[in-house]
Length: 441
Image 1 (spheres, one colour):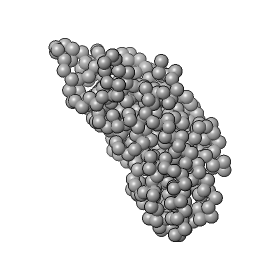
Image 2 (cartoon, rainbow, N blue to C red):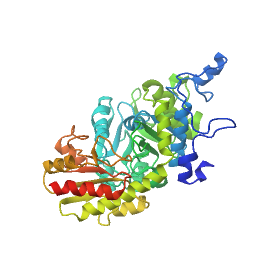
Image 3 (cartoon, one colour):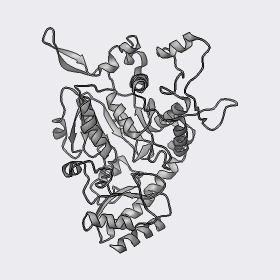
Image 4 (cartoon, one colour):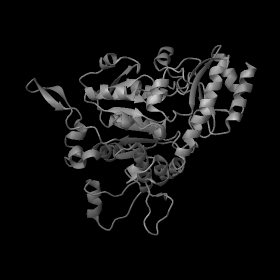
């Protein structure tokens, strides 16, 4: 029934359906544990034979209700919340990758994710290859290996504001028998639902537009339920007989899990295999759960997501047009501009608008950008993006400062790039503040 509802209705109604006499507003189940009458009932929960709650590290009613709402918004079969967007991206890949595996990713991704993929996961024995999302299918194909397990990209890149050609990436991923994982944080499911274009798994930093008010840090992973984990194999070598065999490509999902008495996720849970493994294995072992209080705050933000996102886009379009026409501005990346290099892709994937984030550069040098930002009054310099208040950041000096100049260029971050996150204030006041700051240059 939920899938037939419009997205605005899902924002308000999905996830929590109170029964007779229950609270209308989603309650905060601020409890670590849940009581049962006998040991057998709890044993069945630990063996995954029944659904229920016994410890909040694995599942909590408040968290699950919000995850269910996000799954409904994206059109997925299930979802799991995490304590941050970084945790969501890590879990999404680690759920199907292990030491000795490899994945391919667009280089147009958030700096923290770039470091996670290129440095931290490498220490775990999982390698990745960065590719330009503008490269031809043949060039991207060349990055794949026999042990490649996934392809990753961001619908709208942070901070470069580039648009991912989702269908192209899905085509390449599926040709190689791997899922496409897309970070859909900036457009949110209000403006884009990647599953409709062939993506298999979607991640979010719920810290951003979904919360919308900078009150909680969180993440989410949503599974479409469309990827067939069982039929994917790769050629391996049996060390005993030194003969080539067709081995399961995703053994964590398609072969017995000894930590659950030999249970096989795809056989036991069907389309919910991926999400069930996320919860029962990774969250069990690694944690990174959101507090129920945080999920409650996230849910309040989700209830107005369908109202806020269009206003962000409306304001950002006007600000982008102003910057585009100002002689002191060297360049602007905003897909709503007719001459933007990604305008055609935005018309295809984001016809209702992209997001409120604009990337631009001023004529001058890095010092010029700093002088402009320091002169802003209404617009605040914060290490955040995509909430109700307009804010600004210089990625090369802040979020991406751990990257070398070469890595910055590979990630699409120019030294003069200013990331402006346009809020939902009156756009006249936003423009006035930008104008007075430019006049100081």
